Length: 327
Image (cartoon, rainbow, N blue to C red; front, side, top):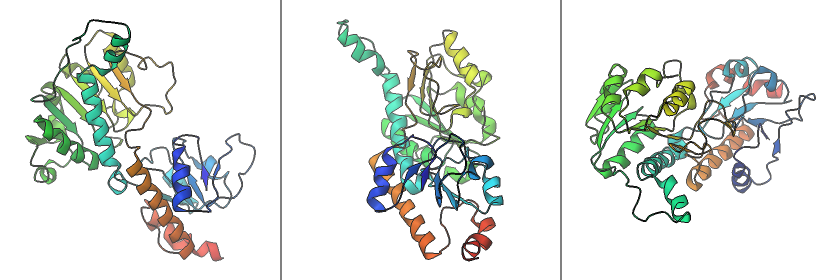
C-alpha cells in the first residue's frame, strides 16, 4: 500500500495494529518512472489524476483515509478498472468528532479563547475581555448530513435557537425535532440574516461551491461567527479575506481550505478574528480506529475475492475487477 503524501501520519500506526504485516510506503512523487507495485493507494491530501494512476504498477484500489474524494479523478480510475472507495463520516464516527470540533470552535471564538492565554502571559487586567454566551443565541446549520445532524443534537444542549438549510427540507424536518425550522436552499439569505452562528456542514458539489460569497458575507450579522467544517471552497476565498480586511467584526473558524496544505503566509492565518486548525476536526482516536477497521475489511475482501464495500464505482469496475487478476 502506498500513501500519496506525508499528511495524517498516525494512519500508518493504526493500520499496523489492525492489519499486521501490511507493507506500507510513501509514494515517490518525483516523477522518476513507475512506482513499485502496490495494490492500494491512499490519496490523503494529494490529487490523484490519470498521470498519477499510471505511475503505480499493479494498482487496484484508491482508498481514501476518510470521506473526501474531491481530488480523485474517479472517471480516470474507472477507465483503468481501479476501484475508488472512501469511509463516510457516519461509517467512521467522524461525524461526531467534527460536530464536537464545531462546538469547540464556536465556544473558542465566542469566549475569545485565543486572546486569553496571551493576555494572561502579558499581565493584562483580569476579568477581560467579555465573552459571548451560546445560550439563547441563534444558529444556522447549513447541510443536514451526518455532521449536521450530529451538530444539531449537541447545539440543542445549549438551548440555542436552531434552524437548518438543506436540499431536502421535508425529509429532514421529522428527523430533528430540536430544530426550530428546516428550510430549502432558497431560504439561505434569510437564515444568514438572522443567525449569530453559521455552521457549514456541506459536501463540495457544483451547486455548493462558493455558497458563501461576498453577498452572503454582507448578510451576516456584525458579530456573527462563521464555522466551516465542510470543504474550503464552500466559501469564496477572496471575499472572506476582503470581509475581514474591511474591519468587519465577523469571526471565523476554519478546518478546511481552498488548497491543502494551505500556504503558511496566507492572509487568514494569524488573523485575530480567525481560528484555524489543520483539517483535524474528524481526527480522533475513535474515528481513526473505525477507519483502520474499514481498511482491514478492504484487504480481507481483496484476499477473498469478495465484492468491495464502500466503493463509489464498484458497479462499473466489478465485471473485470477480479477477472483481470486471473487472466
